[in-house]
Length: 136
Length: 336
Image (cartoon, rainbow over all chains, first blue to last red; front, side, top):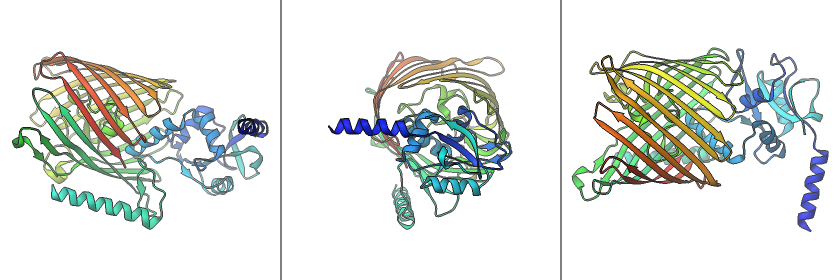
């Protein structure tokens, strides 16, 4: 019975899940990005856009939005991501800065030049520019 | 030894006090931020047991290291101090026991990124040659032992400049230009050269490319030792990484102005994660080192258990074609 309820919940979540979008502030010079470019930015393999320093932002590890993003954009399992960031620590590179909520991400993106975050598409307002859309 | 132990305890107390003071949520293998400064601290150590059967049986605190690093706008910085072979106990031969509590400069550099394509690194750093040498510490490498390719072909460290070019294209193309015209930076604190070769010159060039699951790396260079011997090297590497399987190989050659000093050296290795946290490794190595008149071909069979990624418990067995070189090794290593 529990399994059935859990499966139903998952199904409903999938049904009503919305698109994820990667955003920067409205006047940002960063153009629309490809999936590979977004991946490079969030793995800190690409740290500048021309001369602009990029600041990718993460949500907390257990946040479903982050898990969805990591699965669909980074294409890395949790184990591989742990291994990746442990190696980067040795190389002197930190993971993306983690913020506590979508609301904080939006505020940070609007305030800091070069900041890039991912949020549900329904939260996009006039102060943001969509760089990449992750279809559900 | 007592001084080293005191330093280690001091480091543990310092580390704990930072965590407590800042109420930081610490994650093993990710280091810790010093207050609100753009500075992070981490470190690692490794313990090794090695039995070469008829020859030697030893237990060793292989290395202890402290890292400080960070970045501010376009500038990033790294300092790593390491004590190597800190304590060795050779069984049935107490005279061979070693205590070495001296810290060396393993890495010390500043890097300035001019834009998305160009960056300049100045200081002492791991030579960006091949694959293994990029992340050579016990806890992050696949086996307790290092392949001979990363030990005798080129200088593991460069004390000078690395001019980097990154294409930011789909195949992640990167070019490194190495320039060294001075002695090892460890001279600054120890009057020693902390490197596999005692170099005072190193020029090199490297190209790396990634095509989906496959990465390639090509390197060529020339280095001079403090005894004025000059060597040229060429190295090629590939890495194929997909799901639970990773295959990699590196080959190279070294020569001086008159003759070939290492006509060939290389290895091929497969790593398979057969269950989460459990890895099996098979490596085949072969080399011909004319300077020491050593020619060997050997196989390494290893197993690694990682309860958490920054903790590695490893075992390996080596079969050599050379007599008396077979060995078994076990290690425990942790990255903080």
